[in-house]
Length: 248
Length: 316
Image 1 (cartoon, one colour):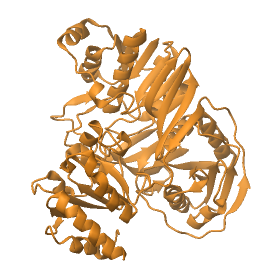
Image 2 (spheres, rainbow over the protein chains, first blue to last red):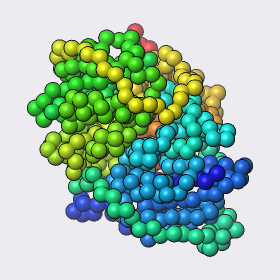
Image 3 (cartoon, one colour):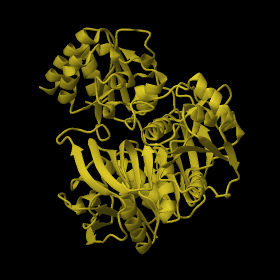
Image 4 (cartoon, each protein chain N blue to C red):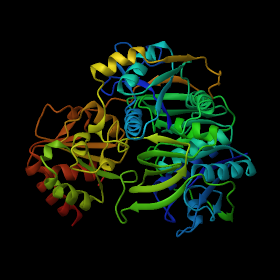
């Protein structure tokens, strides 16, 4: 079993988001970067599969050298080797095309991405990789079972879930539920030490061109001050919601 | 040229996100000075011509589609887009819509902009605003391609009536599925989080899963869906599918009522697009009050039952 786990290097979930004064880019000053949460569920699932039935895990990101600590963290959690495609991520299509090139040349049985990165929220990379490589795709995946060459997956749908089957290799867009929150691994000292010597290959990009560009960034408009209603005056609140806000 | 909109149906029925996507498509078509063609897949219970009410000039009904698969639906939609000389395809970001829009963008060799929240500023080239950084930012994105797939964030644009007479034609699928649907497990008759106009949500302040009765009662009275904070789903008081926030679902209802949730930055990221936010919390310093429109400082176990009585009185 060869598993490719694609990860994104994103601002920590507690980050306050700011943009440069000319509104042209995200201001990464003082920002801590982490493995994208949706990708971490997939990475943990890959480690569990490897422990249960053997195999190898390659972790991949598209980014500059500043993303390497995030790759090392994934190695410390349990990946065997890392690949960094040496290109600045510009849009979903360009990132997917670079990943697809690794997939085509890697003979992987399972390709796990996160369903969405929490920075640019494209929600597109896993499906685009599958489309380029002509592989089955299950996004918003919250369960995976392997039986030989057949994968059974549970995906989220509106108001419930659907069980689907496909033949390997498949591409997954993972999310919470693929593993539980309390199953996520915190790298231990042995993991961190061994991660230092695991191979991290820098691959030059195929030079896929993005199909869109971000021209301007702004913050959402600030909220007006909260209107507080005294406890005991719930009728007044309900009236406000009915006549002023007109939402009930 | 034309603008195409994929109008999703659920078990043959159109829902608010279907009409919202058609309304958005209408805004794009008007801006481009062209017609809007709606496409819908699978067996229908509703009459397809209802999409005309929201501005579709024509509806193509592909009844032989079967269960969703990104390859089957994506390749079929690509052929329809080519056959109808479309330049823009609009898809609502449901679970299927996210896969369909991304697949189509590759198959149709188009640009794609997802999470869009407003009608485009311009159509040649397409330039449009989208939510980024889990709603902590808004970016303007320009497509460098002539063909563009626009994936619309739910409840961002609204459904607007624009009565048009829409003729219904039939279409067919092309290509093959690469996944097989085995089983669908869905609660029927419940309002789902993604389509709910009102959401009642609760957090650790409720102290235990046995106390959710009043949350469900309030939600029932308001025709609302129920949701919860991350700690509550982590400890298993409520299912994961109810978790709203940065690593759960991002929602944008007209009214979001948060009970006993402090309002951590990760939670706000998933709910800040709500039009009106009401916070009930016993801690006056809870950060959620800064993001709220209305608030009550008080114990949920006192406030919520009184709120239920007040809503009953209003609804008569």
